Length: 484
Image 1 (cartoon, one colour):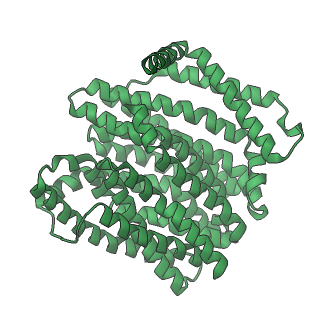
Image 2 (image 1 turned 135 degrees about the vertical axis):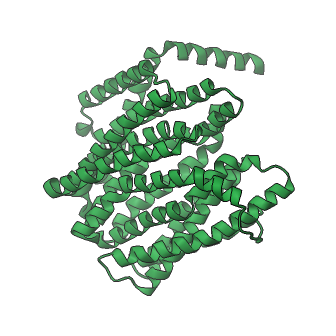
Image 3 (image 1 turned 60 degrees about the vertical axis):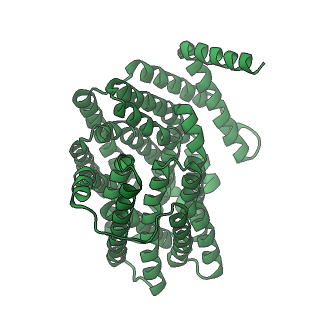
């Protein structure tokens, strides 16, 4: 079931993040470091606006909407949700304006309007995308995931080329696409226009369940985006632009890899728990964590090993020097953070102990901010990224201890050890093969190195997990027999 659900969700998990990856690279060729920094800063602020204004309700909806049975109950829920969405739009707009006031740059009228529309439309679309996911509307979910990353980027690129190569024009393109997509998504989900203030019971349950998650999310946002705020206040928007390329690409690459298996895993764990099978629910989270590690470990290691030629190939020259140093650190930090979010955090949400999530995130953010500031002072932009990585490691270690001792999450040490061994063998093989001396264009050499690393890893993994190979062969043989 996990494999089937993963395949169904795969287009949404791949295409959108891939478009974001392309956009992050493309902006280095169209925008100056200063304009890139302003754009990255506002996009990070939108994530904060969503966390402050809407995430509490999104978490509640995703977990409990199945409990509203019958037309009357559904109508009551929908009117309450519409009122909450309207109120949250005001909060998000205020956060967008407040963000502009903190920048070391004077915002233009286009920038102000675009920032407000961008923050509101992006946040509401994110919520309704989760709404489609909770309803099992996979096609709608997939299309909704592509509104900003694909349609928004296309319009932003047109605006930058037609009007002005600045952050305001790019943001306007994203805002227009997202606003239009939001109208379509609203109609597609048939949400209507009726509003009513939610029942006190709904607000109490939603706030009780979602508020700790929001607080944890805000703290997590600081762990993820705090580096941009610290650098902006210390060195200005241009420095934010320089560090955001490597930091954003590394985190995004890790997120794309993680989402290959995580979108379908949590709903399956919820089903096991609702059926009264706590052990199977924990086993599901543990198994999906092992699968996630099996993807993240070799992928992040491989990216680190080919990061220099990758940067030379993709990134504009003014951004390259900082990206060489920051990208490997960001990839590892992103991999470790996704591993925690999609294992430890999911166990906590599953058993509704969301306050513990706050504690874990507080530990991570204190370590991250402190180490980032020290790293920036003593090591410049690369030092800031290294400090954030140190904070991420602290959060992961503490979270794993909490999940194992507090909730009984079984940690599959034997599987993790074999996966680590396969990753180390892959890294050793890549280090011994002199790809940099091979003839041919740089893209071809990178492709050969990736293919060689993937082949070595898969063969080693097959040798270390013979039971899985036998099970897969038996299943394939049974399928062939059924067809014939």
